[in-house]
Each structure stands twice: as structure tokens, then as C-alpha cells.
Length: 66
Ligand SMILES: [Cu+2]
Image (cartoon, rainbow, N blue to C red; front, side):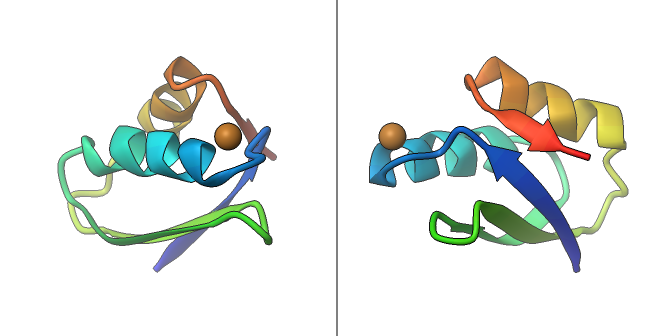
């Protein structure tokens, strides 16, 4: 299970947008985006790189915190 911090989510619409963005990455499974924690957790079964995960979040309009 991997966990990333996401900045900029403020409502369920944001959760949906991030869920869609991360869910489109091959191998991302059991994805859960937590609005209150500002966090996404998922299984990265094809070892998607950090850069592509970051890009997916940023393309959706949010940011990954380091
Ligand atoms: Cu929102």
C-alpha cells in the first residue's frame, strides 16, 4: 500500500477528480481518496513511478505534497 499527501482538495468533487486521475494509472488498485486527511492510498501493482503519479494529480488540478 502506498500513501500520498494531496493538497488542494476541498470537496467531494475534488475527491472524484483525484480518484479518476489516479484510477486511470495502470496497476493502481484499491484506491481510496480521503478528503479529511488530504490523502490517497492505493496498491501500486505495476509500480507506477512517482513522477507519473504526481503528473496525474497535477493534471487534475491538485498537488502532491512531498
Ligand atoms: Cu472540490
